[in-house]
Length: 414
Image (cartoon, rainbow, N blue to C red; front, side, top):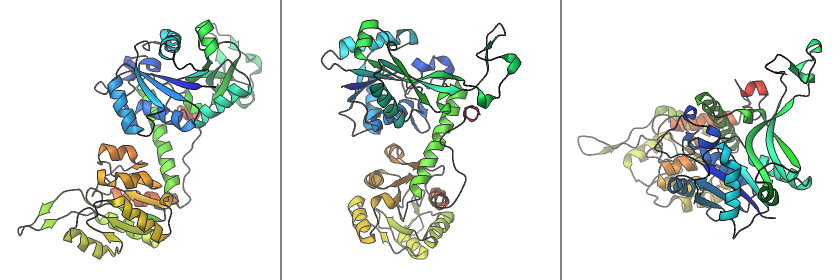
């Protein structure tokens, strides 16, 4: 069976559309930054990671911008993801028609068996949701499937009549069966159903139940902010999980340990500004058994003097190609790349950041690095970014408050 995903996108990066300006289920600006990356990238990343699809089609009204973002965010997905210019994606009323026209016109030479409509305004969807839904679709021989969340609330009609319960014998909330509320995250539809009935839902319909927080709708700025905070919490939890395995931390110098500025004294000597709190953080790591290594493309006497003062023996100046050296060091240390953390801010660090288990960068790193990092510091280089990473690594190895990955219905709306 051939499975394809269909993701309609809207908007351009030059217009930071507020959610209140459009119907966000269909018209939300897909290129607007959500928790540090374009909104559409969250769902696309999980669709790719799920391994469920033979092809993923992004249907965009600004295809050139989307293609650039896809190439930057997912450079290895060029054979799986295709961006198409298609204009029948503007409102909810035409969604089924868009699916049908997509089937009839765009896939005439590449027919599919099952299509998955993925809504860009549901960035909390996870790869495991796609996998579980696909398994349910196949095992139960479904014709279509929708996603929903459980709601254990008391519903009433506008006329004041209770729905599904006796108001005179009001049960405790944990005891009520509740309802499943469609959240619109994604839909599965077999090709025959779509072709015959021109509708995404019909025949034998199944429901994939998702976690409570996925019920939050991005229909206004409040919804946008709530979802963004949940994504930031997930990113932090992921970064902490990765950091708990770090046995060695490798750092760049300019723009990481320093502010990337070049200061010159009266005699013409080059000076660099370091942060003392960074130094203390590195010392704390060493006291906890984590090795420290510094690699720089520059060969600066000022940096050499600073490394000597910090007693960092693993200092390698004037290295233009950092990855080969990192691979040699990992082999000598007997440490897997997945157990190495790296902090960098510029293109000379990109290869190393893409290979290590924990990739960190200062807040003012270049855009390519920001996209690669597992954790982006709140502080800039030379202004405490390294100390922030050191604290994160230390906290990750100690019992601390657990950041929830699943939420109750009430918590999801707080």
